[in-house]
Image (tube, rainbow, N blue to C red):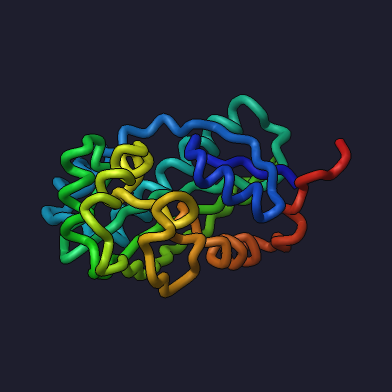
Length: 218
């Protein structure tokens, strides 16, 4: 069965590959800031993180589904979309982008715990039928070591790794040594909860193991 990842995130691609899935990838054409701003303006409120990530995951997956139905009507499989946000002390932390912001965040986060929110949207596409969708949000609590030194923070920031990731950290690379606990599905912190994806594809009538295609002969 074909699998399309509605994302160009290297972390999400790596995660699916490690889970035995070699997906096709398509970049969703979604203006994330504009989508969120429009919904918040229409509803007169600020979306909490769990609604924010689910909204964007669903919009991104739907955009790719529309493209596939137009360009590849014979597609028989699933489309997976996702979005993540990290919240710490009541503040949503996106990508820091600069060394100064990343350093300030790490000085504030060490010894504390934040929540990674991850939205998931899965569509089942069958030629000649209307797509069906299932969606959910997963959360994982991440606790940072309280003895991270200024020198370690400086070296980590200088590596460039934390600059382009939500929350300014990773759990599966250099940042993992500075994290003491993850409560919840650990893969959520990487970019998607595999256990959540498994449940969503099952809800759509697909066995998770049917998606395993890594190493399969063509």
